Image (cartoon, rainbow over all chains, first blue to last red; front, side):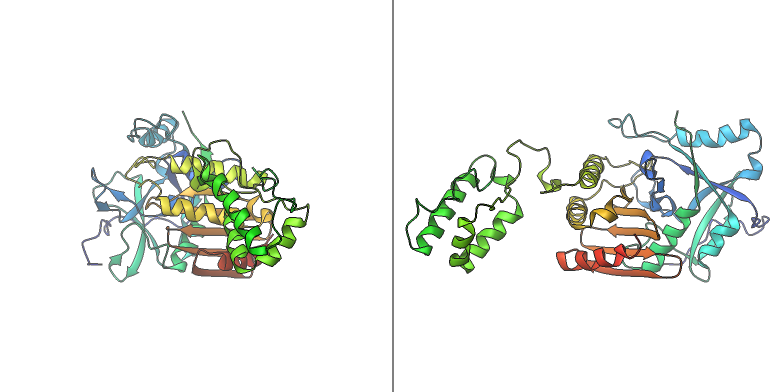
Amino acid sequence: MSKRKSSIDKSAAIVENNEILLRLLCSPQFYDEQQGIVNIDVFDLRMLGSNGDIPEEYVSLGRNKYLNSPEEFKKYLLLGNIIKWPPNEPKNKFYGHGSFLCQDAREVHNMIEIHPLLKSKEYHIGLFYAKSENEYYRGPLPKDSNLEILEMLMDLADLLSVQKDTK
Amino acid sequence: MTIKDLDIESTTEFTSSPKQVLDEIKNMLHCALSSSQKWLASGAVIMSLMSLSASPESFVANVDTPQVDITLSSPQPIENPTISIASQSANQIKLAQKLNQLQALEKGWDGMNALKPHNKAIRQASMLISQLNDEILRFCTLFPSNDAGIYLQGKLPKGRLSIFMNGEVMAYIVKGASSKLSAIVDTNPTTINYLNQGILMYV
């Protein structure tokens, strides 16, 4: 994996440990209502871009403290509604969101870093997985060869308190 | 369809030679399996044929036993033979249905560019849920991964379970309050049996 310039805004204020953070659950496949289990893929790094050829460097999160009015919160959740679903999957729509404390996530594993992002709206931050100094994992994570990473994803998913927002 | 249906319980129509009895049974099974439901034959029948070849005398003894009832599966067509399970419990049926749903997912199921679950991973998950203990499966569900794999995840009474299947190997973690089991292994009856024993300690 080659080093590259990170998306982290090092000039911005750090994310406080007691902050409540949000993760959009942009698919019904991310949560089993009957069993109350969150898909650990919620915290994996994905492939982005129109051709799916750009590996994601961070998991996108919302900062609850900047979403304290119903209008702002609704606006944040609407990000889940602008996603383009496969045309033959009409039931496959925005699902909801999960919340957790920044400190709890950081305590899961020391490779987890949560930073403000360059050129980002203030409520938008990223959860990074440090591979070494100034080097971060890019998606998807090697879950099939690194048990430490599989365990980390499992522990992160367990932190989520899920709330359903399906339209 | 069962062996009973093929009317091979009675030995009266067979000759006295075990080899001839074996050939007769093989022929009858071959006829049945050559029909349009050939693909419905379960692994149990294949295993039986293998054991026949190895020891025809022992099979003749089994044929005389009225309890012989090897299920070949329902004669009704099923939509996807790769994820049918021979003797299903309610939990296995529920998970098989979930697996069917995952197999039907299209690329982009996460709203981005998540890949469609790979057929190899689907078959791997099918094998796993057909052999895991029902006391474990009742606490579990299946999920897709963005890179075409399948997760089996569970909230167990004494811990949590995550198994990731990529179509070739499975990486698993069972984690309790003060202990955990984890490994990356091939998916076969031996490793699944070991997994059963390990996970049951957390149920």
